[in-house]
Length: 281
Image 1 (cartoon, rainbow, N blue to C red):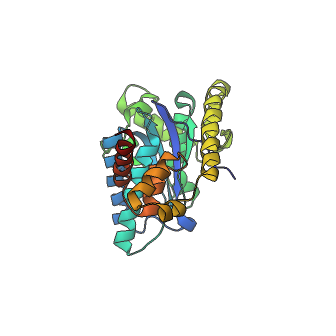
Image 2: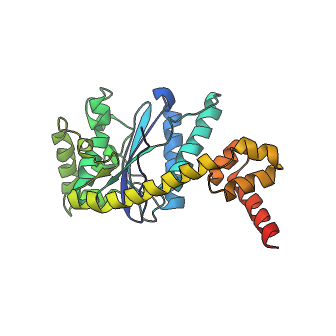
Image 3: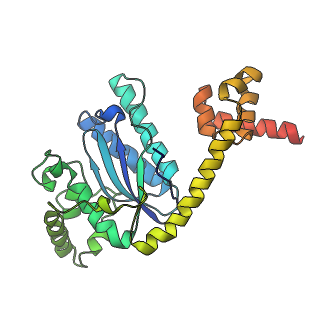
């Protein structure tokens, strides 16, 4: 099955799901959950993410996130990479913590933000892990209702404003809205093309962007098929030249090259720059 498309632009809203490798737990205890919260705070600060809702389960998490700068991929890579490193180090493990890449659904904010925020905080109830959303500590629900302090990175104002200008009344209306959705159908049933949730106009608009993104991805795959493998580059050149030539082929990203050669992306970037200077000098 092809990977879902990734559409990134300033102001985009996404429902993100990320699962543990082989569906194993990614949160073993309170310390793990707090570490993930600390990391998403750092991501929000660095990439200016706006989180409207979240929920940590046992083997996966949900986040409803808005990206004012259109940089979803960068922030999510930091979140999952940093948390995975923490998790493996703390539990003395090796290998993948997450099951491949995260799944992102582009969402029409005005039409679906409220429904998705409700769906996310009701996850523990549907899974039988809590009797009511307020019983689950590890979601945005308590912060929205005022039962717990809201983290600085959690954007409560926009969602509460959907329920009125008076904060106390809005919190109550939000609570009632969530409880009314206990047995409602999942809004995710209305997702189209595995990655877009919105009305017909929104889907048509972004489906064209999706086609363009798919064309770029297909071109990259075709170039990779024609290029040498990274092992072949390593055999033919010294390490730095091999990395630079592989990148110049346009078949591999810097991250892929860095992972293959066991170096940082910055090291690959320096090697590419050095080779460019040699060719241009």
